[in-house]
Length: 260
Image (tube, rainbow, N blue to C red; front, side, top):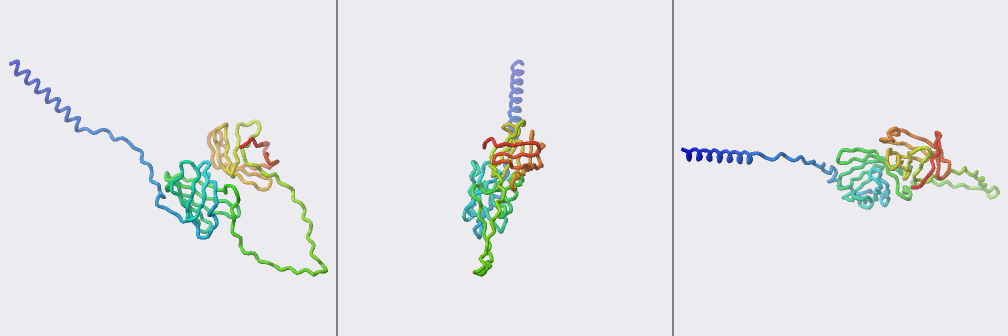
């Protein structure tokens, strides 16, 4: 009687263990969520440069990437001088329209070249669907623009009445503005004005970004974006009078160059 009871109990325990093992085998681990990186949208795009030489051999500042310059080379080869952005890149120009792709097709840019101001104004896109308006300026020397044929007018002067050239009146001199870091007394906001790009800092933190231009003895600064201490600067334009090579003033402020 006792032996039969223990045999039945042992059999029940074995059946229970088998059921537990089968239940464990039937369950699957929870799937692990893995973030999928977007494919490079323009990975299959390759450009071949320009039919008539204009921008080939020139170098440009590309503010979309900090401290980046781009070299337009023959056959559409685009050389990106920025750490971590050296993937396959190419460019082309059709009329005044400039396009390029870079970083293995992760970034696409399209803009218009303005020879009268030597600027390329356009829009940069990345594969995350971020869009940003960009202004590219030459890095270093000016960009040569093609010259159109000029008409020549022959002027005949009687020997007895030689032509006299009027003495030109000297034009007032305009201070030559020096780019660099500027600050004004009583504020912890400083500005970096370099390569026609304007960046505002609060201490060491960048708080606003934009552009600046020089018109005679006037400097005009426009901030496109701002955050934190520079949020109030977003969308605003400021005009100052250049008072020396290293200072400008206006609206009760006098900005003085403190270095690079």
